Image 1 (tube, rainbow, N blue to C red):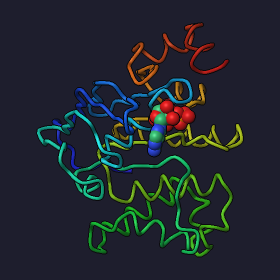
Image 2 (spheres, rainbow, N blue to C red):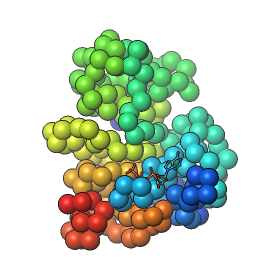
Image 3 (cartoon, rainbow, N blue to C red):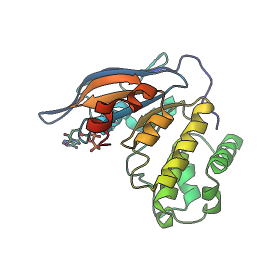
Amino acid sequence: MKAGTADAARTLKVEDLSVHYGGVCAVRSIGFTVEPGESVGIIGANGAGKTSTLKALMGLVPRSGGRIRLGDRDLTRVRARDMVRHGIGYVPEGRHVFPGLPAEKNLLLGAYSKPWDKETQRQLDEVYALFPVLAEMRDRLAGALSGGQQQMLSIGRALMSRPRLLVLDEPSMGLSPILVGSILDVLLKLREEGLSLLLVEQNAKLTFGATSHCLVMENGEVAMTGSSADLRHDSRVREVYLGL
Ligand code: ATP
């Protein structure tokens, strides 16, 4: 899978990001960067603010403060539906496939910002190479696919726009350990091919296996940061944030 145009200046930089729901502060002035080709995880207990951070990055919930840059572009005021045009693919929590449409139609919706051309066909072929089961199921309604297949469809759809950065919210949710292993293999392959990843996850195997660096969130703030290799063995991280 080819990541988008290979420009060196595609670092994601999030500064001072805050989210409030009414009077409640869910994310408090957090900042982080994802370097080109880097894979960063966000972990934390339930309610720590992980999903709100991703949604605020994507413009899906209002931000009460913050700046977002990708390379030399300021994306702070870019609307959610236009983020994909700027190279950010999003795999939402809970998949959100279109159940009444065939699997292939779901994938093609991910390429909506580009006219059908050879490149779309090539990208479709690459998604099918990454997830062969989707090629077999291409005419099946998405609602009739298993949970794991729907998760693959959701990731495949995001890849259709040829993102530079793929943002994933809990891709392991509801999946068996074997399927979590398959998702991990796919994320590692995407990493190898140079795609940047930002991953929110509760599953320790997937988080630490797929990322090089993690932020640990607590009460809307970044409580710790470190290499995934170090955090994997940190007893406090394992007990408090991952419930292991
Ligand atoms: P989880 O792992 O359970 O998804 P999380 O770390 O992703 O948790 P968020 O879902 O971002 O956390 O929630 C952060 C805080 O914001 C929580 O206290 C949550 O109850 C609150 N919250 C989230 N969404 C809303 C909303 N739409 N309206 C009001 N409060 C919300």
